Amino acid sequence: MTSSRPTTPRPNDPCPCGSGNTLAECCGKYVSGDAHAPTAETLMRSRYTAFALLDDEYLTRTWHPDHRPTELDLDPNQNWLRLEILDTERGGLFDSDGIVEFRAHYAFGRDRGMLHERSRFARADGKWLYVDGDIG
Image 1: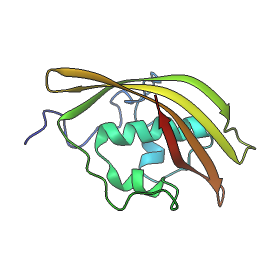
Image 2: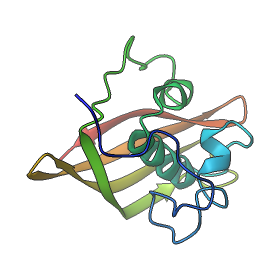
Image 3: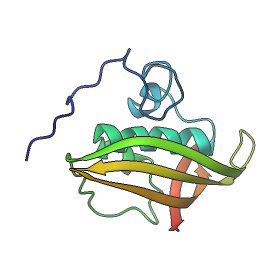
Image 4: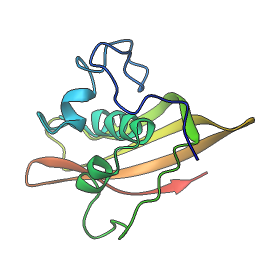
């Protein structure tokens, strides 16, 4: 199946996370590996962006090794539309763990859906990692 989305995002495209900044000014530097997300919320936003861009390498790299799946199967026909951050607990510059609650809206063909998750993050070796989450 072929996706209608471009395979290579441009740095001046709007960031998929919805910050209002360009991809280069926002999540692009994290997804590319040029920088590390400074907070759990920033990592959440960059991981959403990676899902939208079908970047399984970044998702794997930022998944805690104790919980990381052996394989990711991203569907190019699932179009991530919008991210809403609902709540954060800890996850700041000086924290070792954090929680980010979000809603991620998507389209799959003509169907629309929403993923609501309360995600747990931990800092390891100075880098934030996604641990797991409760889907609600």
